[in-house]
Image (cartoon, rainbow, N blue to C red; front, side):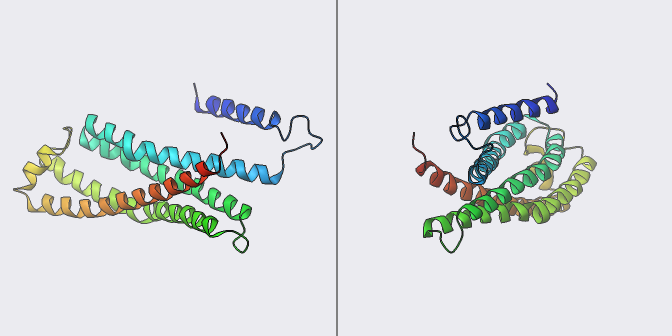
Length: 210
């Protein structure tokens, strides 16, 4: 099924949900209120950011690393992560805007101010990854791949051959150290963003009546 078909089906289900919602069905109003639309935007964007972060951080990336040749894995990540951080960043920005509109700073409670701070922090962590750490990581990866190809490694799964060669190759060892530092900062920013979203998920759960 092409992506445009999947997108059309998703929009159709969303439209059906709006049309037959309690606020719309049987109401004299011709369209849902702005308040409901903002809540929906916030919820959908937050859920998208949360789900994507959960999958990429704890499931998808680990499965790919354990099953793909390392250079193939790195090249795939170099294409995927800019898109991932862009999407999560946009979703966080929309969530911040919607939540901020629904809870104006001057009249919001301390808890709501903290939640706005968590959402804004998640956005900033993703923006930092997108414009700072990811380009640095990709550039360092490309340089290291070049050195590894010269040493006939990189097509294996895992780090074992890299570590063996690095023991006798100071250039590769230095690259590993620099890459590890940059990648570590990127991972830290991603985990902090995920943590901020996790804090907000707890807040949203406390507001549900099931």
